[in-house]
Every structure is written in C-alpha cells, then in structure tokens.
Length: 150
Ligand code: GDP
Ligand code: MG
Image (cartoon, rainbow, N blue to C red; front, side, top):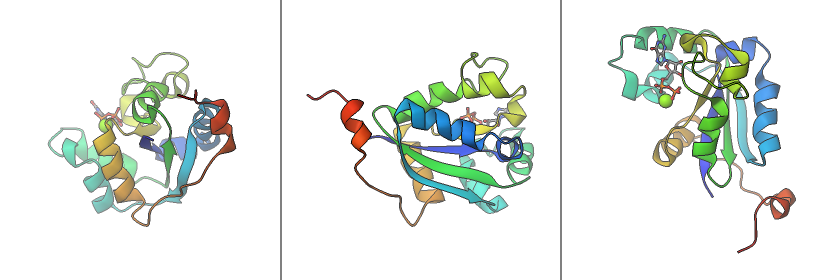
C-alpha cells in the first residue's frame, strides 16, 4: 500500500486547521500511520526541501517553515501520494481549485498551509526523515468497506 507524508505548515497550525486537514484524509478513507506536532530545526527543513535550495524563495521558505510548530503525518492507502496532492490542491492557492485544502483555506503561495509528497520515492524519503523511528502498521476494519476484493 502506498504511503505519503502530509504536513500542516506553521500557518495551518496557527490558524487552527490541523483538525480540518486530518478530517479530510480520514474521511477519504486513508489510514493514519503517524502524527506528531514538531518544531523542526532549520537543518532538518533544509534537508526536507533540498531540491529547492537554488530557488530564490528558498531562504523565505525556510524562515516561514521555522516560524512555529508543524504537524507531520503519514497516511496510507491506494494512490495516497497522487490523491493526497489532489486533495491539497495546486501549489499556488490562486490556482488551487475550490474544494481542495489550499483552494478553500489560503491565499498566497508562500503561506499555503500544507505539504504533501509529490512521488512515491520522495514520500518514502520524507517519511524516513520525519519519522526515523518508524510508523504504525495495523489492520483497519474500515478497509473492508473501502477496497474492492479482487
Ligand atoms: P509543493 O510540492 O506544492 O509544496 O511545491 P514545491 O515543492 O514546488 O515548493 C515547496 C513550497 O515552497 C511550496 O509549498 C510553497 O510554500 C513554497 N513556494 C513554492 N514556490 C514558491 C514561490 O514562487 N514563492 C514563494 N514565496 N514560495 C514558493
Ligand atoms: Mg514539493
């Protein structure tokens, strides 16, 4: 089963949107495997966003992401990475469709309230970075009412 790393950014935490974001992933049918409020170091965030190190907005991004605690979580399910990205909406909230998390709750790209892994490979690397101790594995009875039997 696919796993994705979803994170509520400092603005999402400050604006009281943790529950709303958890709710959407929970109601979709994805399974929660890890969730923690954390205050990551600058070094940790530079590692998380290492692919963007050369971008002009990188210093501002690190400043934004270290401006308060974040909530990291791991969600598991069929197509969790791709569907998770769709649920967040386009990176720039000006382009995020209404009904998506960014489309419904924020305005600017530099304060877009949430993060979601963009590929399965990056998801696994991000899960290892944010939850090095590992995540929960368990059976969820709801799955019998979510997934067709082959
Ligand atoms: P994501 O995968 O949709 O989060 O987008 P990216 O990986 O391309 O960028 C990471 C984060 O950097 C985004 O979620 C934004 O918070 C921020 N970001 C991306 N592009 C810009 C930009 O042009 N300006 C600013 N200020 N921030 C940006
Ligand atoms: Mg990204």
